[in-house]
Image (tube, rainbow, N blue to C red; front, side):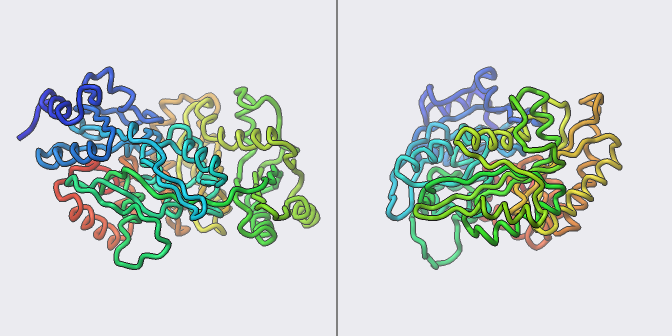
Length: 469
């Protein structure tokens, strides 16, 4: 039986109350539009449960009557995994399910509700004298449920790992409304399949994460941050190897950025002044986190790098304000491209040693497909994850440029696959890359993924059409 919109809204109101259900189109708008505005589809309603029990009630009802659900956290995802695909879904927002359940600084753990923002988690850890290291540009609005659901990465994956590695356990509502209580903080538990690792990164297709146990780390005593100028990605790679050999795990960030990205930011008033030492073709933002009682190595290391010719110039941050400006320039690298018109984006990864080849071959292939296109590749060179973006040719029509994106995608992904890389390093698959996943994923892996989905969600209630298509 297919339920009408009114029947769905009334059923949800009976479960959650009138203040926790939105069914008017105008009220739902903010939940239907994702950041890049690439996917537009309506929904039957938005449910806003306040407790885990209410999430269970909604999912159990949906399972019984056959209503599709789209889990949504902070709505910051970039591949459309958190918004409707078909128009008959109910969005289940976990935004009200927020708070810190507990913090154990001695054990290095904290238990948080899934609706808590990443920034709130970072602040709570800091107040306890600890560090939660995952950091992304949208951390003020991204919520832990979505961060885990998409297995977010960020700028410190190099030392601390991505969201999956920073999560010790999860609590999740499964597709039939039952509650998986895997919130434990055991460092060793060898009792079978790791359901936590299955749910993290599943993009809401296997369950709705309601809480998680996260790893905390000792807070660094200080940071040594430098913005250096290099001649090429090859030089940046040599610099990375040399600096990591000196700093080890204390090298917590190593970000490659092209000159054009700084030019964009200055042109559009996002940077007040030039912050690099020279107008080099490439720049690297590197940071060492100095532990308490530890000794930094950045300044001595840079002297050696200058002597070896790996670095042509640089600026070592001598204040918190200068460090923040350097990181602001990195965080704005993606946003500023929208001010230059159309931007064709790729979130890809290759083996670290292959990053220079990816940039060279991928740029050449894109330019061959669209003459005048402007490559703006940047990102986490230290873990092989490059945000390989392309801005429209100067003076081009944005709509026409974006309509011709497919040849650029095909050219870039062909290079990525040939280099043994991934078509999605940290943004996920969502609804944007389902067709591409089917083309490049190992057939055995796809078969196993479909079997898992069928076993855990036999009615296809959770996030239909996402990831597997």
